[in-house]
Image 1 (cartoon, rainbow, N blue to C red):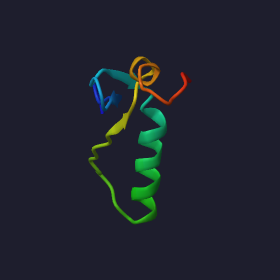
Image 2: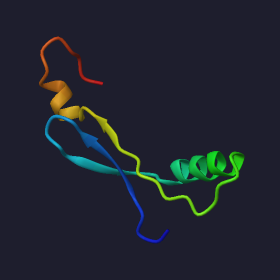
Image 3: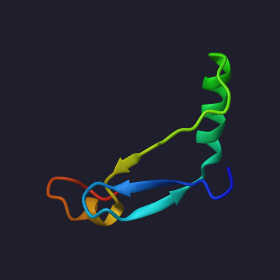
Image 4: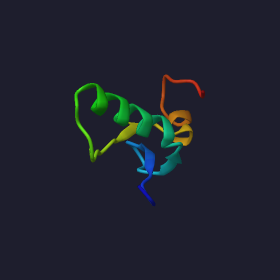
Length: 63
């Protein structure tokens, strides 16, 4: 799918960073194929805490 991208989003500040979509796309094709599906559309949301927000949280250490 041209222009189709996936992003990792910080749940605190909402900054987003693109991620390599190839592993996600391979997984979708594999799972769909195992179940006899084709032409599958999908939505993937990856939410975490970015390095900047993580560094500012009490009780945590920077990655």
